[in-house]
Image (cartoon, rainbow, N blue to C red; front, side, top):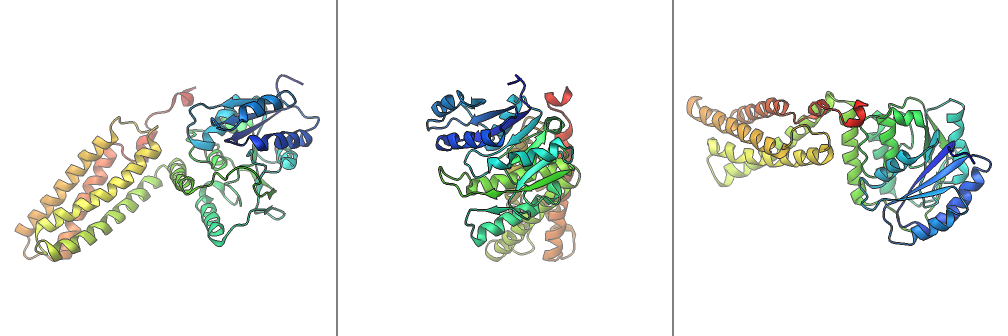
Length: 375
C-alpha cells in the first residue's frame, strides 16, 4: 500500500470498543482494492478501546489517536482527526454502526467525478430511512433544527448528518472553524463556503451497542453553534438582530418590573420606579452577554469583556436615571408611558453606542485574525 492513502476515514469514538471490529470489517469490504486509512479519534474512553484498536491495527490500516483532554466534543475530535489525515478525500462517520459502511463508495463517487464538493449521507431524501423509533417531539425537533440551519445548508435535507465526505481542497478553504457539539458537517459546509452539496440516501440503523450521545445539553450546544454560524455568515445583520432580541427581552422584563414596582413600592410617576425597573433590563442583557462571551471568547479582541459590560451598564443606567429625573422635574405631568419609553429609550441608545465603541458585537470579532489565517 502507498504511504499516502487516497481516502482518509475519520471516526470519532467514545466508549465504542464493541462496535469497532464489525465496523472495520465492513469498511474493508466496502473499500476493497482501494488505498485508505482509518483514523479513530478516541476522547479518552473508559472501556478497552485502546486494546481493541491495537489488535485491529494488525489487520487493517488503522491509527488510533487518543485525546487525553478532549475539547469541543465530537466536532473537536473530527477536526483533530482531519488534521492528521493524509488522504485526498476525507470521509467522516460515527463508530456506532448507525452509518452504513457499504455506502462509503457512493459518498465518494460524486467527489471523484467532480460533481460535488461536499456529499452527505441523508436519511430524508428519497430512498433514505431510519431504524430509530422517533416520537413526535423528536421529529418536530429535527425539522426545526434543519429549518434553523437553512441559511447555511440551503436545500440540504439532512445537514446535521455525521456521515459525509469532502475533498481536502474543500476543507483547506475553511475559515474560523469553531467546533461545538456534534454538528461538524454543518460547520464545514458553512465555513468552507460549500456551494455544491450532493445527498446520498442511507438507512440510519438503530443503535445496537453503547449509548446515544444525543442529550439535552447537546441540543443547547447546537443552538450556541447556530449562533456562531449566523455571526460568521451575516457579520452585519447578526449583531443588529441579536441586539434587537436582547433589547426586546430586556424591555419585557422592565415592563413587568415597572408594573410591580408602581403597584407595591413607589408612585407611578416616580423616577425611582424607572431606575429600579431598569435594573431588570440589565440583568436580562447580562444573560445574553454571558452567551456572547461563552460562544465567542476565542475571537473577542478586548481582554476583559465583563468589565466592559459593567462600564456600559453603568452609563446606560445613569442615562436612564438622569432622563427619568429630568422628566419628573421639568416636564409638565408626563404620562407613565412617556416616562417609561423615553427613559428606557435613552438608555438603549447609550448601550448601542457604547457596545460599538467597546467592540461588544460581531463586528469586533473581525478586528484580528487567528495565526492560521495569516499564513
